[in-house]
Image 1: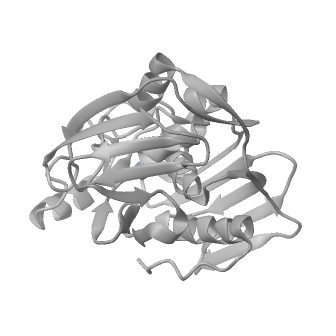
Image 2: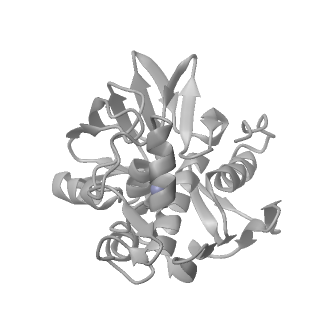
Length: 279
Ligand SMILES: [Zn+2]
């Protein structure tokens, strides 16, 4: 595999989920070795595990006082479509949620095209498992000759348990993962709104589950675990290389994903990273 970038830039703007602010974004090609770099207020924020500053509700990266929140869906689209290098200029603190999935980003990547850069892409390989846990939450990376992911979620009623296993390539990502939307519970949305958060949230950019089931039509019966995989792939983009391993994630979230990305990145760089900030 060789490194890739976009063949041309694409732009979008939209509402930030938590602040409701309008944000402009340009995703542009970048040279081999550049990686994925956000640029806010003239400050470059490489999308790598050591720049994760918060993981409580979304993945937030930062550098030299500048931060960008909710990077995971855009990063997931770039990772899933194997775009290794891109420069992302953003005018505000948070990547717009669009429809709560990565489908629109994938459509734009397919529209502008992807260009090979003729440089061999770095991959992380393992000779022993890596295990990260937090209570009954678990993420494991196992040695393997190709990248695959298994996700298990177990949420309160009415979502319940869902399972999904995929070997990730561009076609599988676009078809099986990209369209799965963010989800939440009606009571959580009401509580967030009461605290002044989720101002940009609506039934247009998240699946909302009420006591009796989803308020909208689901795109898949297991859309929740598909979105979990979407988030996980976005967080694994922070390794900055192709993870040639099998990932098993049980009830995981952004905090555990970031810890695994740090461990894989340590292996890539052959040196320990400073601890990722706790959520
Ligand atoms: Zn998400």
